[in-house]
Image (tube, rainbow, N blue to C red):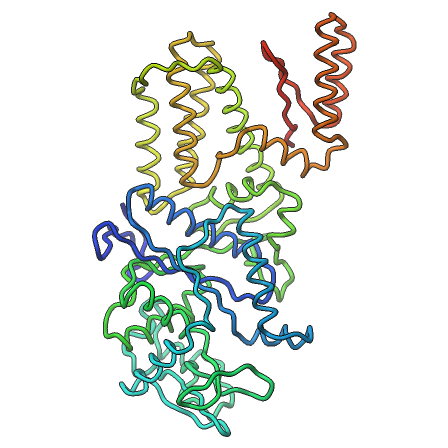
Length: 481
């Protein structure tokens, strides 16, 4: 298995610290607003990485944090006239609501910044003792800053040089800091802000220190994988790396993994230009599985361009799989209980899927393997195979489910997929009304009233419902596109 390591700037063989044990820390969200499609991409990417490593028999401990104290949280609380705790709790719950719909598995450990203040204080005190950090008086309390120039490797993750960063920094009048790049480890509290007691008086942690404290507590001083969105490489992850290695004297993470941006009209999403797409709004229009497949249809490191057209294409692709599963189930109504014979197409599909995912978690290629497999299965079914081919089709259905589970796709019963589409497409017809018409049509066909049967079929088609007559029943689907 090979992964692209942002720190090395190249693909490297994946070798965890302890053989088959892997510790992963992915930076979570700051809980002050609804999550957007960029958050969804990062969550889906790391969800699949964790799922795949477990599929390959690694013992994974996955940690994803919540930043539940921050200027943005405080500002929103002040605007709404509520406590910062209410804002943090509300948007943590909203995060879960959105991510549960997208099929994001909960992390093994989901720490909150405010539950780890003591760990942060201990790290900050050691950084002061070792000469990497300094205190600044602020009224009755003090702030603490990390002195970037004291860490000689600063910039090695983002490939930025301190001199160039200093030259390009927006130098604001700030007498507190020794240099513009120095960053806050601890902030003295301002009037009306939440605070915690510390050796420096009342205050609260800076943003970067929380991830160092929580990742080290739960995964040790050197992580196997640290990751998040590409926007976190600088300054957040660069600062994390600097303070953590200054604190421990050890490498902070063996592999740094970063997913690319979601763009709209070739521009990165940004609240300042008003092109942010909330997950909640998208899930009102699209089936979550289609959105998930869209996010996995490009390599995780590449930017992915969002458009309604691309989501619709993803919806068609998911529908193609469920339609094929439905067809397979019709072929194997009378399952062959004999022992399965290993079929070359099954083994080859699994092998190619693993090869794709071993190549830096290439989900785009892995999806291509599944779709090519399903295309071949449809060719086989087009030839109306004899009974012995049901063994192949039984195994084929299992392998679609097995490989799909790694991506958390194609796990529903086909009828549940169509039920969700029926609701999302805001059909004029309920499922009960639909089944009533199908029953009425079956009765007409039994009485050879072909005109009435055709009329019902046409009526349903006009409402976006496609009927497929089988030997013993009629199946329905929602028309896509």
